[in-house]
Length: 252
Picture (cartoon, rainbow, N blue to C red):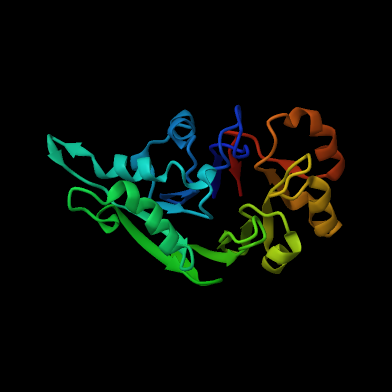
């Protein structure tokens, strides 16, 4: 499995693009979130909208969903030999989030007699329900209120063979999100959003280190971080965690 970090930055990043990823699952590409910088980061990484087979949306902040409508429209309005050859976009989402996501997309897509369903296929999962993609098992877990009070948000776990990765999504209150409840002896990596200064919506590095047992620190891949990350490299090294870099592929 190959993971391509399209971007690793926070919502207001100027240099690292939004924290969005492509995961290569054999012959399929899954996009993890679709922020507003997707229109730049996707192409810089060598991908096109038409390459995407699945999109997972963790929550509805603009750095995670602001580019979804454009992706959906670009895939729909394709032409081959002068004829309309639309591609629907398959969106994987937690069942609780679907009504809000539909409402968001409805504003831009429901015109000229079309509905959201003309553009999208939705795969709706409940907590820890598994969706199979070849040899991979994808499941979603609920982190609502742990990122921002009153907001629906979700992470995911991706398992294959005897390995899995855990992706936190955006989390401030780690205990409330119960991320450790998703980690087991087969977990190869924990993709964890980390802030290096106080942040009201994301855990700081110290909060992350206080939460995870020491034996798991080498499995933590820090993401969704400050643009001035170079100031904190020593902290990362001392913590013995890894740093996800924009457009640097990770392979398991």
